[in-house]
Amino acid sequence: MTPEEKRSQITLACLYLAAMALGVANGLWGGEMLQQIAQIVSSIFIRLFKFISIPIIAVSIIATLASISQSSDSGKIFRRSIFYTLFTTILAATLAAVLFVVFSPANVAISGSSASLEGVAPKQSYLDYVQTVIPDNFLAPFLSANVLSVLLISAAVGIAIAKLPSGSRPQEVLMAFFSGLQSVLFTIVGWIIKALPIGLFGFFTVLTTELASGVAIGGLGSYFGAVLSANFIQMLVILPLVLLARGLNPIRVARGMFPALMVAFFSKSSAGTLPVTMACAEKLGVRKPVSRFVLPICTTINMNGCAAFILITVVYLMQNAGADITVGTLAAWILISTIAAVGNAGVPMGCFFLSASLLASMNVPILLMGVILPFYAVIDAIETTLNVWSDSAVAAMVNKDMYGDKL
Image 1 (tube, rainbow, N blue to C red):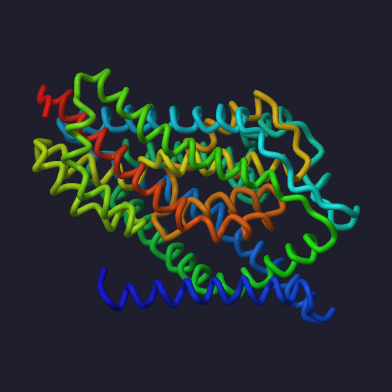
Image 2 (spheres, rainbow, N blue to C red):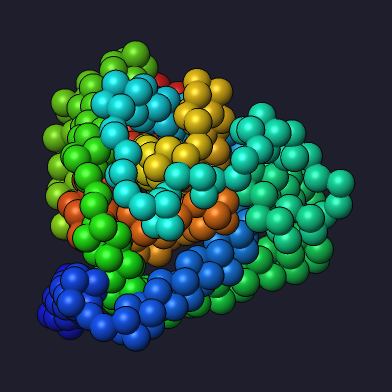
């Protein structure tokens, strides 16, 4: 990390702390006008999340799936990478669902009907919502913010682009279009993140006002316990067992990838860690055709930590909004969080931003995201370490399948 980047992170952290402190002070002692301004700011940022959420999820998935290579060897490597990526991500999401049930985090109960989160969720059952997945026209899911339907349409479009004749003009034009659109959306996301301290001021003002009306936040401790447990169990138990099942020594793989894991923890960026990850993998014995093809793909789509965070966070806030969390709901969100993690935008705070976007698109209140944010730096570091460790495991397994190397 360069000195300039370090100063930028310190400045951003100070802005976050200042915004949160001002929000708390405004919620406790601010005048009616200042509190109304904060409510408007909170509403504006929720609208911004809604504005950017559906386009960025759709474009990220299309751009990722459209990049499928057509060559035979690359195709085999890609198919194995996709299999292991989806397998480990589904395991992470399933583990998160189980831990959500085990921890059973309590709601943040707010007294007073005007401030209550209860009843904000849509009245239709989740089964009714699932029935709307198959759209009757192309634009309807985007206009109604039907997230699951958008995910499925995007996956179909991305795969269809990849199946066009390799190097043909239609494929090149479409890939260039979606790649460029993705860059534009990421730029907008960057602007929103830079302005996020203003949003935090609004969120913390509104939340503090509600806290002052009488709120019990004990359930948040169980929520954080579920998130952290999901990450550590996936990292220290599930992935090593998967490696052992494929005839690989997880301790040796972890020892070889240790420098990359440390960089991932402190940088909190899978993409920023990629050069170190590739160097460590090749030094470990992963062949270049695998490391230089699999790891860049995995950096984009292999998000074990993100899948766990999305599932637990979204389901927890849905529960706070009055939704009935059933086994069917958890099963559906295992699928949704897996697909969403694959399409996660490669931007700072990507999982946090994507979770807030999913919630906002379903009209679920996201004020509690403001409480989660101060702790997210630690969660993000652990998630990124898990993501890079999962990338390493996938590369090692693909290398074993392709060349028989046990490293």
